[in-house]
View 1 (cartoon, one colour):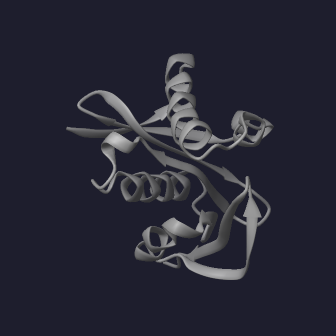
View 2 (cartoon, rainbow, N blue to C red; view 1 turned 120 degrees about the horizontal axis):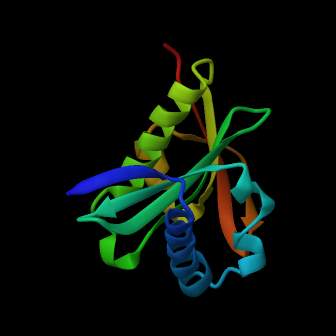
Amino acid sequence: MVKIIQAKSLEEIHEVFEIRIEVFVVEQACLPSEEFDELDAQAKHYLLLEDGKPVATGRYRKTDKGIKIERIATLASARGKGYASQIVQHIIQEARTAYPDATYFYLHSQQTVMPLYASLGFIPFGETFIEADIVHQAMSLIISD
């Protein structure tokens, strides 16, 4: 069974960080100083649980531009099941509930996972750029009622 929760307790936030360490720091060799930032305290974090075990995560925060979706990560053992898409869709729903006037969603996609975000309606804009030694592309989604 799959369930998505907002990570609020210290234990749940620790589980979010464990997934991000495994995916971004260990697998992708990002520096912990690049992965963890002061924005973690401002963001709303989510965990996707597979049979009660945390296997995917993501966060969002409201900015001057709109809603920024960040740090989408799925453990290698749980990939290919659509969990990243589920987390993104859940974050969009949660953000729309929290900020009913929000219509602009954006993210910085690693170039290799752009098809995932494109399948959810995100459109690339601007030039590619390097973030944490990985090629990224800004992408946005406008939702109008």
